[in-house]
Length: 178
Image (cartoon, rainbow, N blue to C red; front, side):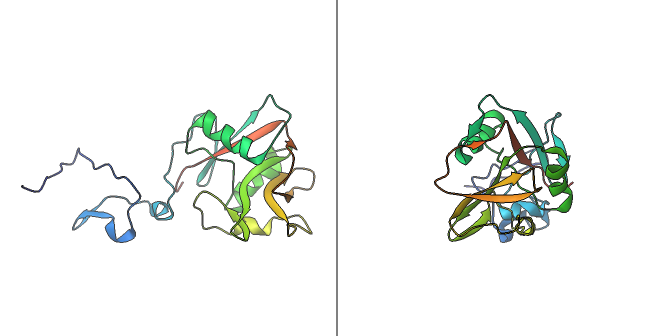
């Protein structure tokens, strides 16, 4: 059976993100040029009404329920905006500034206690977020991180927390390199 050929107008659908050694279709033909794919995140276009800051798009939605668990707000983002939408995270001072200057309530972050430590979920390798905890945070029994607008810092709550009061949900899409 002869090898199939591709033209400049064809593409190959991949079932998973390839390893760095598999990023070429043939010698000299690069499939992906965005190095961010190496951490498993696939860039999305920012919807028109969202705010792009660096490699992320953010939107804030007023919600009808006055409180919610972390899982409920995480589900809200993916249900409202598709599977690539998550609770927000941040990798730079500019992105952190979005929360400090724009968000005036408590909102969940896509950061939680898992495998013995707090981790930013979603594929980012950034540890910048770990410098934004409020004094004394996180406690040893904590499980979910949120932005506390009163202090302008991150706080944590235990895994068995009751729903957190909040009138808004912030959602994020990874947008790749600006």
